[in-house]
View 1 (cartoon, one colour):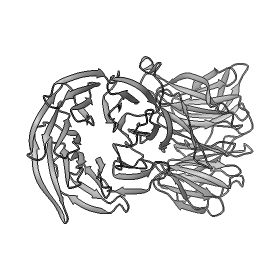
View 2 (tube, helix red, strand yellow):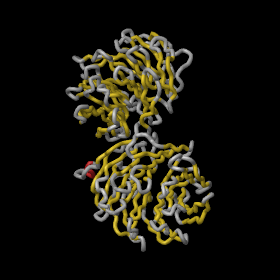
View 3 (tube, rainbow, N blue to C red):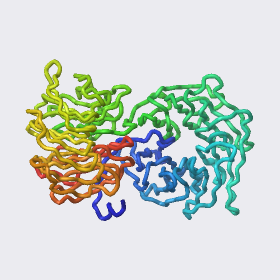
View 4 (cartoon, rainbow, N blue to C red):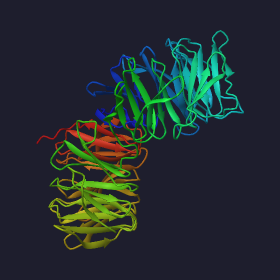
Length: 619
């Protein structure tokens, strides 16, 4: 990877739509009260609260799994996951310089949790279940002081750690049947645990908060109650609520200055409850499980993150949820720009299609079809409709302003609709299915008509592009063939064959050549008339290429795939001019807007990235 990207100019990342809501306590507010800090893929994002301006910390090689911010705000620490048997890195960032301060490598496969000591002296890190150890690091020397297994052999996995608010030598760890107070013995380089006694209560603790005066530990459990333990004696002093427990468990806790608790549950309830008797004072229901609560300043305002990848802002007084950012929480399969404008684009992921304005972090429109998966979408050229292909074998056509369903074509393909495209005259749709058929549909004022079914492919159709005169189209399939069809006479004109699973195909704007790519990692240029190979270039050193798009002037094209790199190519030279590194998951789709100013790429981890396109069109 380093060899491939070495010396190639970098693409400038302008904005990111996305937030990994599955990272517990991943959303933080910096002590300066100006920035939100949160993970997405292998990037840590700093977002200014007042105007939404984003900055990015790049350095992780895989998805970020936990984040912590030091009390003074000087440092941010982030841990990542890695493949089985490989070490997972902790990075400490210098907040003021926005640079990497230290890279700490000891844990295997995953870093589960991180916590800074109150005076920025130490960082404690907890490894995931394949690792099971706790390590204390000296921040000044960037070295490990000591380590220890996180829980006793008889107990389960440790899930979280939290530092004392006043003492640099004391921290607490908790998990499945384990709750320990640790003391750091610096002269002997050891950490010594004291087991807390919870009596007959057997719980799995998901999160820990320690009261400001360090008297009590509060633990949120998967059973939906909160344990209150005396930190000095290690004895259980209270547990509640007794009757109305939190559904799907307590996933995150925060203590306010007043001593009351903010509680987020797995069912999406966000509650303010009394710190003395756990009675509910205020409650709001949010979409999907709450995973982060971040308090700004003294607690007049707080931010909440959920598994639906949404962020909310709350005021303490009115306790009303204001949705401040939304994003996909699963793989984004396709992206399409509205023809003739670079302002609007649409994305699809699982059961929803979302419409975005290029400059705003919040969606303009969300169209949801429950329990279905949208595989492919396109805008009709007149901008009056969005056409989409779904895994239930239906084509659905929606109005882009209201999201109203305009048309549904049933039983389009037996094994789901896997690719779709609309003609320039907006009168026909070409669809491809999981069984390999290509079908042409005519749109009528009151309905639709199947014009023809064309069968050459033996496996799923992965991509369809229509020629500008609406008379021909090219379809790519994972059976290793691309077919050029006459869609007036409905016959195949040309077939190209390669030992690959084709994922994507594009016409050059002058339409005498097509370029293809797929699992063989090559970008191949073909002659449209005789189907001969003109040339092929190495498109990626690792992983298939899933998405490709050519600029309107035909001088450049872009690719993205399993190597997580966005590449901009010179068409004639067949060489990479720029590389974009920021995706944490495989790139599924990629498009350049019509005026060649912006490039949008989407990936498996739910991210939508907006890049500045480095070759603005001369037109």
